Image (tube, rainbow, N blue to C red; front, side, top):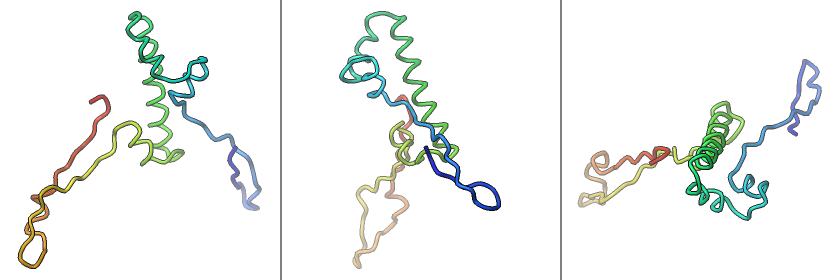
Length: 116
């Protein structure tokens, strides 16, 4: 529950705050010790593989949707889903005063895309 205030008198109200599913929690719900055991069962049959894939997509969609509307920390969700942009600085050359010679040419942008 999350406390919020409504109306001109700022009356306190309690609203249900959504929780995103987590793979490890789903595994425990299924009485398994970890998600890897469910993931390994994808090889058992195509039907089971389809079910596990749907579960994974539902979890990712839920996290993404709640992050977009500001209910979850978007930085954490982006990192968790592999959507975070990273900037890596490599082999930066310095001039005689220790200043970067051309920092823009020496910055490599790496974008992690979900599913890659």
